[in-house]
Image (tube, rainbow over all chains, first blue to last red; front, side, top):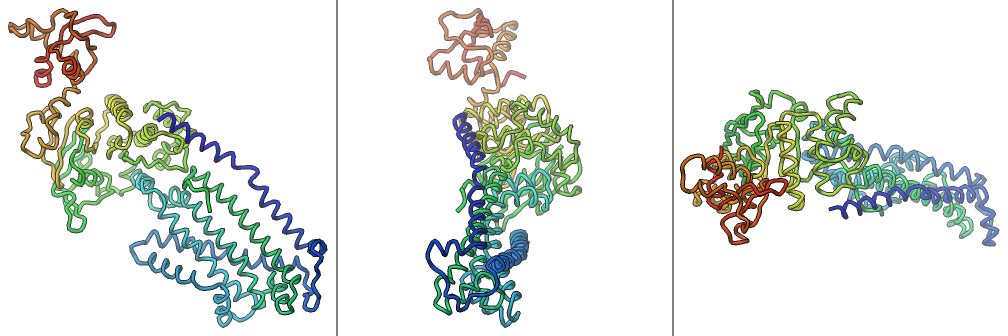
Length: 266
Length: 328
């Protein structure tokens, strides 16, 4: 009994120690990202390549990067809260068939390629920012919805039973017990959503939404590898930065959940 | 204090509780015992409306539980479950403080209360800063009991609270809980399937089977149960030995001495000055332990020692066997 307790205490310390240098990776990635956007010519000089210039856009790379970031942030800002609300409703009213409907629709939609979702958004919303934003928002909801349901249903039954038995109202059980304990799992869904959408947003260039997809598309059209890299490298760095940052938040949420669940993320 | 009147609860075709009648007096510790699936947990959960009966009535303090909104009712009834259900994202102190906070108690009063409760269950108040994941099973269940008692509810519902800890820890927790109960006099409904646990804790035992209460009586009244009946079979033949754990050697000795005053050939030989050849037993040991010692040493009498190791008498096997019935 004492040894068990001592071991779990050591685990607790290890979990706390993990904090601190963890932010180094996201910070480093941000630095490289900013540098690549402002001075891509440095990388090109190192690699000894240069776009042939036929289709090089006059829009500076940093502006494309901001457009790209705007697309991802705007679509996630809509997708995450909406999916969270739907997920909560699905679990709370699980008897009503809403859960089954949402899970089935979500699974079906996940098998859809993001390019197809974007293409289908055009007839609905025309060209430009709107269809891309719409498609990314819809597509970005799926992992969050999925993980919200899984996270809430994975909360230990004993904790929920105890919370109800002590006299918490359903809303209090949700806010004080279920959501804090499900948060690490929900955040994994948010990270997946953001990373997927950072990549998928490059396709938005084909719909006139701008972004880092523009040099990629132009590069493909003119067989210009160097031009493709101008879009691909910063967008990959942006995805890596988002991934690393959200991982830090997950660790933090996991610690706040008292080390629950025990898995150390994916 | 708690009264079940013809309570029925079905799950699909299964009648989990099938017309249960039971009354629990204020300050009484009633152990609800029966095989798995007999409906004892379901019956317990009707008291705080975690389960709503299909028919029948559950009364607390003479009022039907349906007169109160479930949340308000539950805040005034302590609830301890086998899996403890501590909130892993809250410190030990915050776990204990849950119900006082729900009741809107003042901050200073809450933190004072948390410290008191932790001390009551044998943990230092500094444990409030620890996390549930740092606790062993026994420590977690102590916190579970402290949490249930934090708002000083008159009623405590305990659903196999010591079922998932090792046997030694279980006995220690039972002993400590009994000491707390002697001090606080809560009305306790305690569910278990462990006969020994029931004997150690109960003021009264209610034996349940297929949703009905078969018998409700004091632990010592069950000794005469017909071995052929379900109650006798469930409690087992060893019940007659287990029940001896409720009596101390000192009680048997005092009884033997009181008999000696009366003219009786047997009494003349019991409670006498200690026999130096007999194995020694402490006066605060239970009669079950004394009987065990007799059996293992193959003797029929033991010399009894007090706390300071002084011999105070001789205990004979026939006194052990007679005492549970004769003592008040």
